[in-house]
Amino acid sequence: WANLNEANLSGANLGSANLNGADLNGASLRWANLSRANLNGADLNGADINGANLEGANLSGANLGSADLWWANLNGADLSRANLNGADLWLANLNEANLNGANLEGANLNGADLNGANLSGANLNGARGE
Image (cartoon, rainbow, N blue to C red; front, side, top):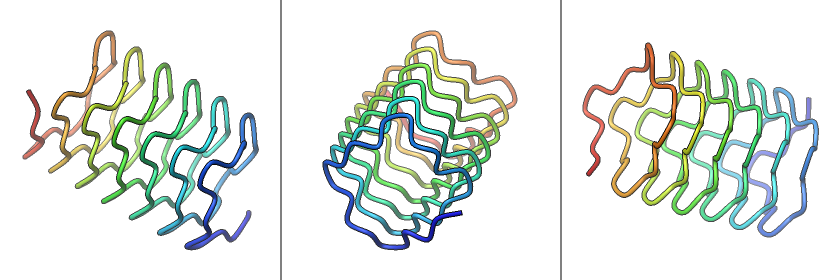
């Protein structure tokens, strides 16, 4: 697995990259292209992922606790069993995303598009959204 702890990958083109289990704790992925990337089990705790394109990405079991995902495109992404505790998903596109069994406790979902998203078994305790 890759150690990219606190790396600055803002604007990087990582489409279809294999970052399975990568350490991206505190990394900056602002406006990066991660469409169809494999981030299964990756540690993105506290990462800045604002405006990133994660369409169709595999984030199953990933740790996105306290991550900033403003305006992120997670259309069709697999976030099953992901930890999004305290994550900021303001205006994020989660259309058709799989959030089965995800932990969204305390997450900010204000303005997020959850149309067609699978939230079965997700923990939404303390999550806020309009």
